[in-house]
Figure 1 (cartoon, one colour):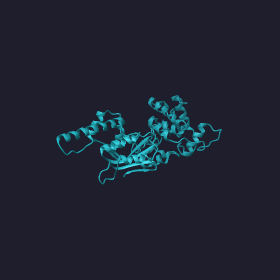
Figure 2: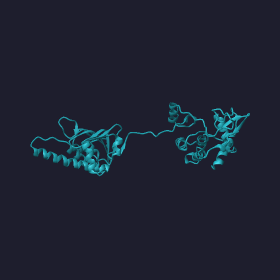
Figure 3: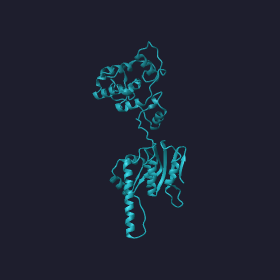
Figure 4: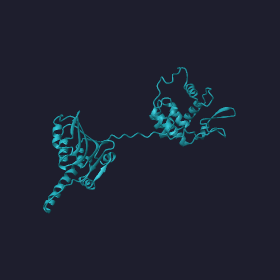
Length: 338
C-alpha cells in the first residue's frame, strides 16, 4: 500500500489500483485513510503517480471530492492519467517545482468478437466522457475542449497547468526584476542588491542632461564645474521639458517620501527614467531618525551640505559647500516642486 497518512498529510504514490506486484494504492486504501481524519478538517494530499486503472482513479476522485473539509492537492513529481483525475479533487491544486501533469484518454484491451470490442469502445467512451466532465469542472473549459486535450495527450509543466486551469499555484519562486543601479553608494542598501551590483559591475551614469557652464567640462562633472577659479551653478534654463517632467515625477512620487536625499540624487544627477528611479526608491529602506542626527538650529541647506561633504560628493576637496543644495532648490522652484 502506498497511501500513507502522515501527520495529517495523505501521501499517494505509485500505481493507481491493485496491479500484480506494483506498489500502489486503491480506493479501499483511501477509505481507510480518510476514516482516520475528521471529515470537516483540512487535508493535504500529496500525489506522485504515473496513473493506473481509470475506474480506480474515478473512485478515489469521488471519495476526496465528497469530503466536507478543504482538500488541498500537491503534485509532487507527476500526476498522469488516472492520477491527474485524482488531482482534480483538490479545492486547490499546487504543482511542485519540476512536477508534470499528463491528461489523456482512458485505454483498454478486449479479446473476443466484434461485439465484445464494440462494448469495450462503448465503455471507454462513457469513461472518457465522465473524465472530461471532471476536467471541465476544474478548468472551466467545455467538455468538448477537454475531450480534445485528452485525445491529444497533453503534458503540462507547472506554469502550463496553471494557465490551462488544471492547477492553481506552483512552489516555483520567481524573483522580481531589479533595476540596474550601483546600490553600493547607499549605506543601508540590502546586501542582496549590493552583491548584485558588484557582480554585474553596475556603476552610476554620468549625467548629460544638464551641461556645465564651462565650454569644456570634464567627464566627472555632473551638477557643477570649476571655471575661472570658482564654482558656477548649472544653467537650468537649458533643461528640456521632458527632463523637468522626469524630475517632477520622481520627486513627487509617494516612494520619494522619507527618501528625499536619494530621490534628489536620482532626479538631478542621473539620466535614468522616472519609472526606474521610482522602482529603486521603492526597494530602498527609509532612513531612521538615528541615522543622521543633526542640531535643531541647522537649516536644511546646511544639513545637506554637511551630508554631501561627509560622503565626498560635493567635489570641493573636503570643504563644505551649499552649491548643490542651492541648485536643487533652484531646480525645484523652476519645476514647481515644493
